[in-house]
Image (cartoon, rainbow, N blue to C red; front, side, top):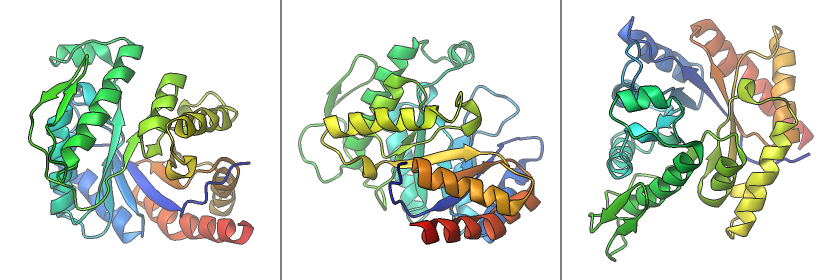
Length: 287
């Protein structure tokens, strides 16, 4: 059993459909009203039936007061890292420190290439993501007066101006499943953000944690500094049993953030008002 001791957080994973453009924003507002901590959107810029995720994040930030926002996860191959870093810092400043940066290496390469992106192998995509994280953190480090240069294979900056600094320490969360991505998460990221349904079985969770923890220690980091987040669906028809299942995932596998995938406002309300408090109560008692 591995409990990293993180304070529990709960969020929503909302489809950015453009069929009814205001629906996604209203679901974010419902999530905020339900007491959830986080609202997230998938990011597929090549998907014509979706709103642009970055535009939606910005609009949703302006329509809410408390809830934090993130891509789940942003498509790096179609979002240049230096520009993404400035956009993230700007949104964090404008929202009062309510933005987090979920990042993915890319996967739908035919669609990415059709939009003008560069096709990469899975290994190359992870290397590109590693370079991008260095650039993003370098942009955010507005107090560093040294020349900003990253001479990567996939991304380069040479003398780019740093800044602005974000309003808070934005978390970089990676959607990771394979060993190389898990090692990158441990070495450089602030959070691991898989989807429960995409994991082959529950045994993959401690295996993933072990790879992340080992890479973190090799990089001189404390594994407890890496938040474990999980996209989930409804795990049981009964709210009480659902809460027990999430509490088990927190206590046994160290997940500190649970993000509900779905666009049903009633289920979002139940997740925030009924399930989340029950999970917190169980975990606090057992800790």
